[in-house]
Length: 311
Image 1 (cartoon, helix red, strand yellow):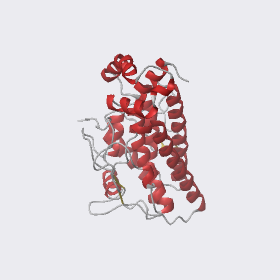
Image 2: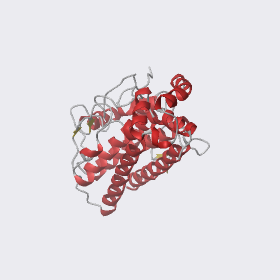
Image 3: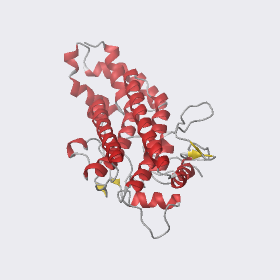
Image 4: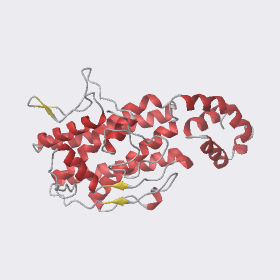
């Protein structure tokens, strides 16, 4: 079905490391593909693997990084809509599987917002399923996720609450929307920043599709916040994100100079990009180089796990 070179390229770009490549070979049963034995394929792909190690991360590493973020978003929205998170069958994989702290059902008062939340929750669930399927045996487990103290820390850093106060993202619709705003713009910039690192065209097309969905989600949240007059707290969250991801201004609130700013772009009308390290600065809630914190108290799983140093 596939030629030798095609199989080698698929393995090298999908696996995070040599152990993953060997696992792929065992799982796929290379003898049935009409190509040389596994030892020969590994040898044929070694130069590509070495070059990849010296340069950009593999497609598998990038997709696993995205999977960590999708775990977080899925847990946040599923808890808000249904009061429960991912099924245990969707949380296993490489690395330590962690539990979820916090999260509960939101008592939505506005039917439209309830429907928005439900649709987004199902999209994020589908993303988790898709990425896990695409990664196969190389997929990472859901890491430990904190949906309680992390939001209080984020709200305090943004100046939404004072020292000693807590922020419950599930207490009411406004809190839910502001909490969602913390994630959605980050997801868009994360996929935009990751796209140049993906070489497999099929994976790139899928990532572009997910980016588009995340952009739709962000637009829903931004528009709803603006319609409810929540410009000021949204701006504080935007400023807080900017203080974490470096000196460059990569963030926009939902209004500028008294006008709506629902599509945050640069001067060319293009959405901003964030590196994986910058994204981790935000979800770890630190401007420093760390491998854990914030929403991921024990870090994310996979080879891409360190935030950047902005100091």
